[in-house]
Image (cartoon, rainbow, N blue to C red; front, side):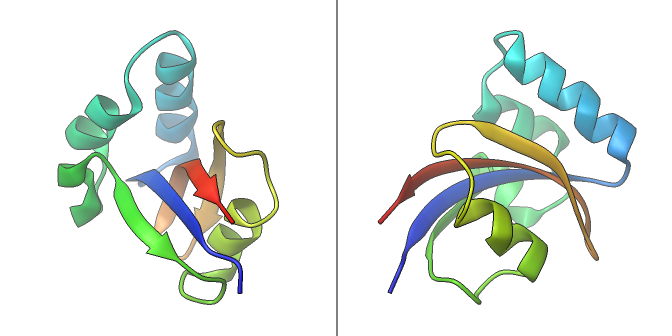
Length: 92
């Protein structure tokens, strides 16, 4: 079974998500941005979600993590929780 590790930043609006993505693309550290801005409790750990398998996260999240390029920041990804930036750190 596939496994992945990822971290994310959860915010309430698409606009905020897009602005944070620009900051990261311009050199800000993903972990620091997550600690400062993420509304998810994982933000305190820099957005780290640990290792997980398909089906453990909501569908929209899984589709990105198990399909898109590792090592890049993806998003905004909308789920019932809000808007996410997702950084896939590994996948096997």
